[in-house]
Structure formats: structure tokens, C-alpha cells
Image (spheres, rainbow, N blue to C red):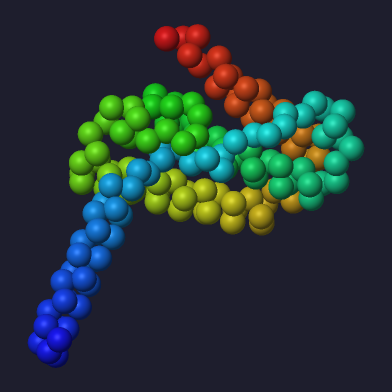
Length: 150
């Protein structure tokens, strides 16, 4: 084969490869609620009282993350891994952009909240911290009964 033919074939292969990659990225489904925001275990007061304050702080911050990332979206879904497409929302450029912007804003808000919590939360009273964790967990348990209101 000539050099021109080799270059032409190479160009076509690169073009097709990049087109396929772009098409796949465009249609990748974004989750409204990411799968990493689930609670594996709920606690009672007795269990929490046995934990060190550092463990309680971590648990408290994890509960805040879940609340921040799930509660604003319960009109769409109450559990992770739901996409716009699975809800019948058109997978348009504008809708994907709106979801992306919302997810980014949520991440920024969460990051700012955690930075504040790292500074101030260690001064909290252990009893109040336990009460807050229990309250958050009760709130999140309510997501299991959300569909009862439909």
C-alpha cells in the first residue's frame, strides 16, 4: 500500500473510533441519586454510646451526605441508581446538563458543609451528636415508606 492509502485508512479508523467513543459518552446515563449513598446499618442509642467521638463524627457526616444527596430528589427517586431515562425524562442535552449542574452543586455544597463540620463539630456534645445521628437515621428510614404517600 502507498503512504497516501495508509494515511487515509489510518484517518478513517481514527475518525470512526472517536465517533464511537463520543456517541457512547453522550448517551452514558447519569444517576439522579448515586449508588454510594446508602445506609448499610441503622443504630440504636446503646450502640452509639459505645462509639468513640471520632467514630460518631464520621457517622454523623455520612448521614449528612446521604440526606444532602437524596432528600432533594425524592420527587424523582428514593433509592440510588435511577436515571432520567428510567423515569421517562427525555435524555436531551439540556436535561443532561441540568442534572450535571445539579450534581456538581450538590457536591460543592456537601464539600463546604463537611469542611465546616470538621472545624466546628468536634466541639459538639456527644449526647447531642448521638441524638442527631438517631434523628437523621429515623428520617432516612422514612424513605422506605415514601411510596405509601402515593
